[in-house]
Image (cartoon, rainbow, N blue to C red; front, top):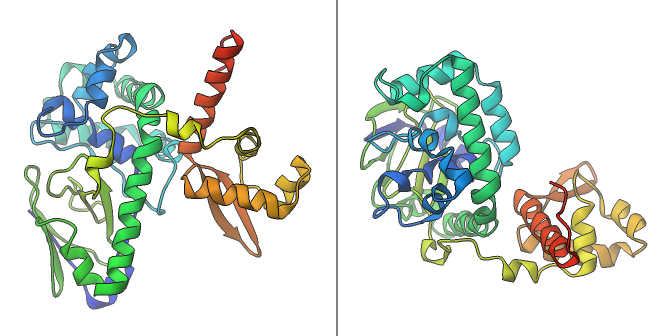
Length: 329
């Protein structure tokens, strides 16, 4: 059981976020308990030739208590961080810290797949995660992310209507806010008490937690992972035909141009269209979760999300397949 002590001044700082790396790492629990975690994504991946080469490493990233090292389940420091940024943070994590977390996970008796020089262990873990993401989880994430985002929007609306305590009471029977503390009961894993101490507390929806999950290290950034609403809506395998229908030729061109933050004016000038026409297309893509917007001064900047990256690759692959040639990676 986890108990976070929270001062009244810290309550307004509680927030929600979505973590692609954390969700991908938690999905590995289904290798250990396929009946409890019914999504067959990682098991299907493990059955492929490419997946079989990495499954020994992936399977060791969850121990018998269903705990995962904290560097693979990072607290999202923005509402919806990008997977490449989170993986880059793992690369920057000092190797001794990674090995210490793996040792803690396995009580200093790491499985064979995680033994060896630190640089070699890090390399194997990163290679396995990146392959799992690119070959399997990224396609699933296109639709998965939209359901998690809908959960966060629901919580925000519920909070506006019923207050913070009312909203948190609906997260899970295993999570309770009482006066100056929040309690989260995990079905397995560590038990400790810690103070939020001005560090902020983030709630993260997930398809791969049954009650509540939280950091292994009591000194880690405060975070509670809770079961997402709408899990029955998530496909066990990726479904793409509906997403392909999002992209007319003009929308595909527009999505292709959004590698980096770009304004509506720049897009309109490049495409030879009015800003109003481009803005309408952008709003449709934003609603579908393949484009995101951020404000910089007076400008609104648009760019593709990871879901947009995946969708664009899928469309390019389909187009190349119909033309009879193999697309560039």
